[in-house]
Image (cartoon, rainbow, N blue to C red; front, side, top):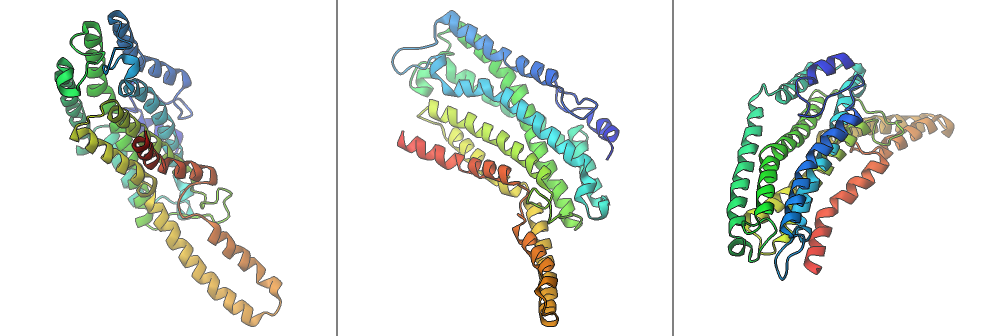
Length: 358
């Protein structure tokens, strides 16, 4: 696909504050402006806490600086936005070079249809676009529930907090900023995460089903020349990891956790762990099957060559090719990316262990 085609397809809506430049990149100034805009909300909460003098509260009460859950909510939107920018850019690069991932440099019609479907979703032209208002309604439910809880914090949390109704400025600014975050910002970000997750999965699935995925066993990335696809999945994993951290921070803040918070933490953990494998499982299946077929043919040639040739030098090229095939990873992760992915996989169990110890 040409750059102009991609700009035309993705121009209608990439993200509220983001636009692609001529090189299909999100300009640094635009990204910085969007990030700063998201930091306005925690600034309001900081000012409210300063007016109420609730940075720290006595006893079991939670001041602003003693509330890790709220700090996670502060930092998550800009972090998710930056990760989304990198993930979206990586996906665009992969789509632009889609021919290089296809056998014969030809994109099958099945793959084109899958790509068109994902673009239609991004432009709110499919039924999947209804997920965004659903997420906004869910955010509204969380906002109303939080309003009720902070109106009587001792009843629900067992202690006072900096944004309770007893602290008018903190209550006003926090309720306002959280309403914007939970009803607009987080739904939009989650929609993008789910879109990227599904887009990558569907595109790779269509490549697998059409048996069009080309595997380069001599690629220096060690994963068949498919490391660009693995990089997209890495950024998506990091976004799910950020969601996990936000939920866990609330889990730590309120020791007497509600069932919904515990369930959300479990779901975030499962989604995060599944993303590392399921997100690129179609590639794993394609590369695994290709390796099996190539190794079977090589095995037959080697047996024939060894029986008919006494000179081992004529067999060495086949041996080297077999070694290259065997050393190619079936998952699209280069060596460095694979190390990061494996480290991220350990995040939930390590956090759970530390929670039990501390």
